[in-house]
Image (tube, rainbow, N blue to C red; front, top):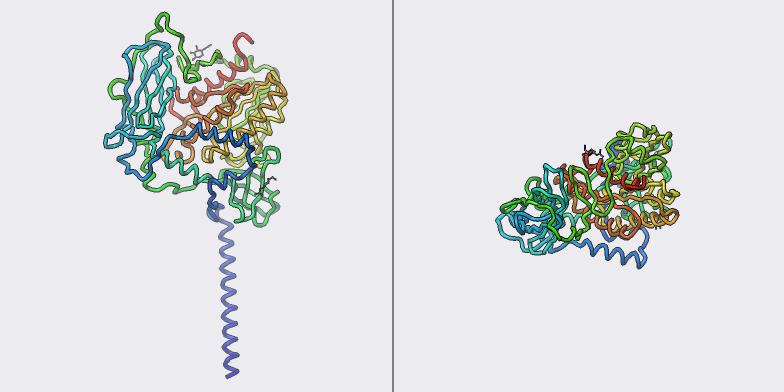
Length: 546
Ligand SMILES: *[C@@H]1O[C@H](CO)[C@@H](O)[C@H](O)[C@H]1NC(C)=O
Ligand SMILES: *[C@@H]1O[C@H](CO)[C@@H](O)[C@H](O)[C@H]1NC(C)=O
């Protein structure tokens, strides 16, 4: 009996041993497999909630919290954002229409009023607002165009106002960027999925290397984190800690990817190209009026809606007093930039200016700094004329191909390193990479930049600071969820409000892309870039000052 028991025990121990060996082999196989697959396949970034993300970084002061509340109120989108509506009851641009108010002939200096009536696919009027519309008035053969201001009456009707600025036949163009039902989806994503774009960093030491995910905020108490919070601004940035490497072995930063399957099949119906995504709204009857010269004794054109400017003969004219000159030949640019240092700090829409200048001005030679293409930093010099132009990207979040982590500089910190003066020009563009985050993160970033701009202007008030706004872009069902003009509209409004009253120039990329006949693009076409450069150079070298 006793012998039997022993034998049974031995068999059990043997069985256990075999099982252990098997599982060890299995584990090893699994680990080998893991090291050969991409980081995005190892684990998905864990879910982060809005409230949770907003708590990252420093607590705002009472004053900052108030500014934030006011800004958020100023961009509050009209409701109710109805959810669960069948597609045929949602706003349909092709079934909607606009009506031009007033006579077929109007005068320069007055205002053109257009009423828009939004309807659903069944042809019934919508009874609430919240559709995202944009408007443009133009004369194709004159190369003229201007953005309109849209007012939501919250009952399915909208009024669009255009200043009448040139004589000729002008045509009204109204476009529905998103029906209100799509805006409801975007709003949900903005609140629930702030981490829908993820980032990654490579860590390396000797033969060991690991890639982990990074973001503005990551879940605490889940996995160990590396804290890359910027010591001077307090801007947060985190990566998951590599398993076998220290946080100080981070090499670079890059886009990790875009979350898939963000919206349901039902929600996707409201993002259909050619159906309800950036689709024109037709006129009920006529879409044109004839503009005649101003009437005698008529008051000068009032710029009620702060229109920044308009195109005429395809060249941008400013409405805020500055005369925009044409810098058609490179020698005129060299002449204007003589003795200047130009710092460009920001995203790829600013890099376009660097590329334009170095391509167009042969005397401005770009140095080979052996930095990655489209990432930088870059530098160009004209030593004969003492011109220095440099570009560097802003700090994270930034969706670039790998950028060295030591080159992730925050704009505020860069501004603090600039002495300033009458020969210093600082161009800033920070907008696009914030479109997928809650707006609070953008407010915080701009607050740091604004403080640094104030410090710079205190050091030397003669420094020229130009801040570029957001612009419209080409949207499809996929990129709408990350980059929609609706996200950028809020970013744009916040940017303008936060720099109002400061001695800086705002370059209105929004109106410059909306007013132009060329299609919207994240990176505006060269014809628009040329006009932007003309605006900047006209600020550097104002008429009568050269
Ligand atoms: C990261 O570091 C900053 C500054 O050192 C600190 O204020 C913050 O609390 C840290 N974050 C976490 C999650 O520990
Ligand atoms: C610059 O070029 C544009 C477009 O070719 C032209 O309309 C304009 O008259 C030129 N301006 C100057 C100052 O040469």
